[in-house]
Amino acid sequence: MGAVATGPVMVWTNGSSRTLGIDSAQIERVVDAELQELERREAAYRGAREPPDLEGKTVILVDDGLATGSTMRAAALAVRRQNPARIIVAVPVAAAETCDAFRDDVDEIYCGLTPQPFHAVGLWYEDFSQTSDDEVRELLARSTAQADLAR
Image 1: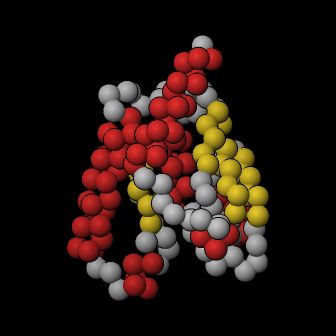
Image 2: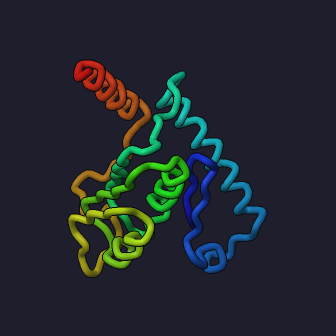
């Protein structure tokens, strides 16, 4: 149906709500729930730290793959609002048409595989399980510790 990102930024997949027969009240409930989940995750992952300053920097957005591209498009639009020098998207697998559609939205895009037919991102992984909040916090803590050591 679409995706949300900090800002808030909302991206809609063309025609999905009409195709699925979803009315505006249902959409509003889903958007509210997703924005609350976004706030929860930001608080859980960032804690008391301020959001990173992206102005003038090169930002690399990475995802496990692009099917419709809604989530990555929302992320790129949210980052673009912060005036980075460049936005680069890197994914291991994507639908070819989605990868091509991004070329106007970001400065560079790298799509490792663009199989035909594509079908779904999860088909290209042996293990496509979700990453837990605890795993995300652990990875962020390790990254922060490494960055502190490099300074």
